Amino acid sequence: MNYLKTLTDLYRLKKNVKLSAKKMKSLQDGKLRKLLRFAWEHSAYYRSAFEDAGITEEQLDTLPLSCFPTIDKQKFLEHFDELVTVPDLKQESLREFDAGEAVDRKPYQGKYHVVHSSGSTGKPGYFVYDEEAWNQMLSGIIRAALWGMSMLQILKLLIKRPRIVYIAATDGRYGGAMAVGDGIDGVGASQLYLDIKTPVAEWIRQLKEFRPNIVIGYPSAVKILAQLMEDGEVSLDVERVVSCGEPLGASLRSWLEKIFGTQVVNFYGASESLALGVETDPEDGMLLFDDMNVIEVENGVMYFTCLYNYAQPLIRYRLSDRLTLQAPEEGEQPFTKAVGLLGRNEDVLWFEDGRGNREFLHPLAIEGFCIEGLKDYQFRQTTKDTFEMYAETEHDASRDRIRQEMLRQMGEILTEKKLDYVQFYVNFVNEILPDTRTGKKPLILKGKVA
Image: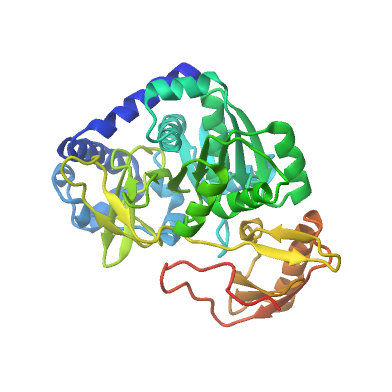
């Protein structure tokens, strides 16, 4: 991103915070109608889906969004090539690009930013942003990261060239890593990536050398940094902490703010739309970016429509997050509030060898498993140096082959983390169910460590 363009785009987007709720609704509806018409004209999938639902072209400008058909990830993957609005985007070509190219922020064909969303249930899915959509999204995440700051305060911060550390899964085309990296470049800051698979000793070395003053990352990973600070192994002067990628619990948030001595900004995003909302005060709730997306909840199910991505429109796309919505009140900021759980919260596995040395394994270091015939998996720590892996397979899959591949991949990850002493076992189960409270499957099952 160009530095001046970044600041100009940020300034324009920040002005929306001062709109009235009525003007925000009008802005949102105008963007929605433009998107619906574009999808009708340029996406074979949406044109067919709308017509099958009895929607005519004349109704695109007036029909309530709730009347339009929904789509989920499975249907999205099945109809990827017909859904996108540009002919040179093909799902199989993206898989080849992902498999054959070095993992970096290089766009596909020099113009499409590809976000890899593997999950744990099969082949990878890809969410694609063209240059315009990517830049709009980056403005959204920068606005969120610097939420509550005036443009003058932001300029004063950027003049000092902040040093930003990002702690998360960074060795793949994960949306967070790519967006944070491009966003940091856009504001001219220095950056350090700390991958969750990197040993703690290396974290400490790099942190001491880089001396970050802004921290961004998964709350469970930021928690590890805070523990290092509390134990006196790292000393940092941090101005702002941004939590993203996982839900942030109130008790963890309070503890992080105590350790870092600064406010924690809770950012809400997904691979499908990396800029969904922000929370700076739990009492105020999560503010959803109505100027960038439309979020609906029907019968407990969440659907969202991304208003800025025209290359790969997502209209009434189902997310498994669970929340309730609250309309803005008079005199408040003009954004819808999200109340309740957002996303999936995971624990970190901590192991200890016979000499008392401790090392962690983050669940997202192993979330990228993609083995033919493997449908789902979970983990449970059983002792200080053992854990179990539960696997759900397709009916006709070879469990022996899957077991060997899981053991091989897990062994490589443990070796990289210097956890060779940890023993692990694979157990096959008939079905792995999601958490009944969140609607998402916990990778790490709760259990006492002996």
